[in-house]
Amino acid sequence: MKEPQDGGSAERAAASKDATRITVEGQDGSTLDLYVLEETKLNGMFYLLAAESADGDGDCYILKDVSRADEKEAVYEFVTDDAEAEYMLRIFQELVDAESVKLTEETN
Image (cartoon, rainbow, N blue to C red):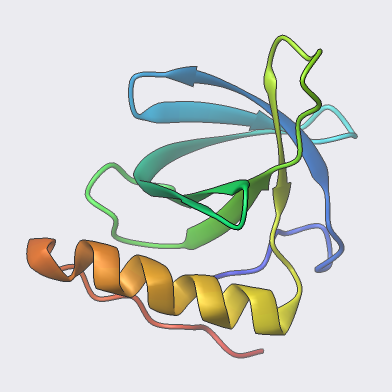
């Protein structure tokens, strides 16, 4: 799993979902197209496992939905807390094991 390219800070991002592809827009206006590989809800929070390619090769990201109920578009934040990211990586690994997808954590 790779940290967002903004130096590791949590970047609030708006995403509009089109099938399994989302476009994440950063606060600076930059965009990143990602493919949703898996999604889950834990403790009332929605999380996405997304990758830069549809087959899951390359960099993967974990995002969480931080939307308010009155927002029309989903608002996601990259998970940058190490403990939360490691925990969610284990959860997603269990969810995708049946599909033979291997998730590994990238260390800096």
